[in-house]
Figure 1: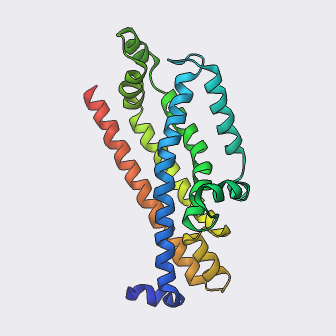
Figure 2: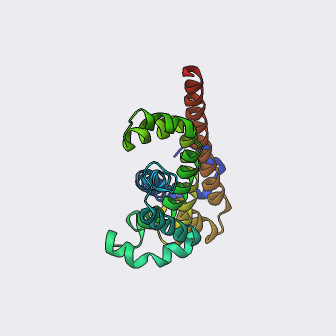
Amino acid sequence: MPKFIADFFPNVTNYWDIFLTALTATYQMFFIAGLITLLIGGAFGISLIVTKTDGIKPNRIIHFILEVITNVFRAVPFIILLIFLIPLTRSIAGTSIGVKGAVVPLVFGAVPFYTRQVETALADVNPGKIEAARSMGSSTLGIIFRVYLHEALPDLIRVTTITAISLIGLTTSAGAVGAGGIGSFAINYGQNLHYQDVVNLCVILLLIIVSLIQLLGNTLSKATTNKELFHK
């Protein structure tokens, strides 16, 4: 254990191995659920834009189904969603606790949020560029990748950053109901045992993680924005 941690957070020394396990669990929940959210939420957001009434491939049925799914799961608070999804989680992951048990509700909680974020980012793409691509005979996939995703890249990076930070918060909340991770460690070994330094360490660590994610997102977003302006 680093000496400065032992000096400033003395009670953490008694649970150092448990702390490292909790940190690893948070890492696993974030990246597994994050990757799935990126794929599913991205696909849903693109589909909402493409299938809307004035989209490049209108389909009222698909659009309506995606709208309902997104709105329903966005309306349910995450803690309640965790409890509600326990039977489904057990059937999919074989357990409702630990990292495996947390991934399913995390995905259900993050995908609707990311779907709306992606939809908003893509909605800002200049319609004139879309029409120009269509007039040149571009296929639906061609317009999606060469126009929508290309033009909205800086905004997509921003909304992905927002979602990643939100997902960190969800993993912490999941710890309150047996998912493990930093949230569980702060509650079980900080709040319940009245060790304020344990809680302080968890808060500082989460602040550092969130700050790094925000810094990375801002850097990538600015880089792609400048690249777009340079090419223009």
